[in-house]
Image (cartoon, rainbow, N blue to C red; front, side, top):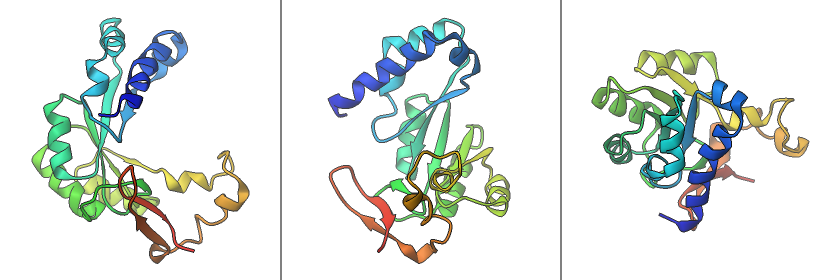
Amino acid sequence: TAPSAIPLCTEIPKFIMNNPKIKEQCVYVLTSAGSSKMLPQTQSFKKLRESGSNIKHFHVAPALWLADKCIASNVDGLVVTGNEGGGHQSYERVSSLVLLQQVTEKYPDIPIAACGGYATGQALAAALAMGAGAMVMGSRFIASKESEFHEAIKSIIPPAKAQDTILVTGGFGPIAIKDE
C-alpha cells in the first residue's frame, strides 16, 4: 500500500463528519487503486460509523481474486469492472460481463455495481439480469454538458468505437486510453 494513499483514507471520513449535509446524504464511499483494508482501518472511518452514519464502503474489484480480498476485508459492496472500463484496470483481460457473472455467482448476497463499458439502458438491463444491483458509468459522463472536462475531450467520447481504445501499462498498472 502506497503511503500517499493513507491521507485520503483519513481525510475523506473527516470531511464527511465535518459537513452535516454530506454526512446526511452520502450513501457510500468508493475506494479503488489500493487495498480495500485501508479505509475501514482508519480511526476516522471508524468514528464516522460510530457516529450513527449508515455510510457504506464499496471497493472496485477488477478481478475475481481482488473481489475475494475485498470481501475478506469486510467491504459493504463491490464495484465490478472488467477490461472495458476506462482508467485503471486489472492485468487480467476479463470482460465486464464475464467478471460480473463470476462475482455475482460467488457473492450473491453482497451489493454489487457493474462497471466497465456500461453506458446504455440495454447494458443496465444486462447488468441487473446478471445480479448487479446498480450500474456505474464513468467515461460516459465526461461528455455530459455538466462535465468540467474541456470540449476537445468531451467531443471524442460519444463517437468513439470499441476499437478506439488501447491498453497502456505503466507505474500504476494498466490504463485504457483512446488510440489516436
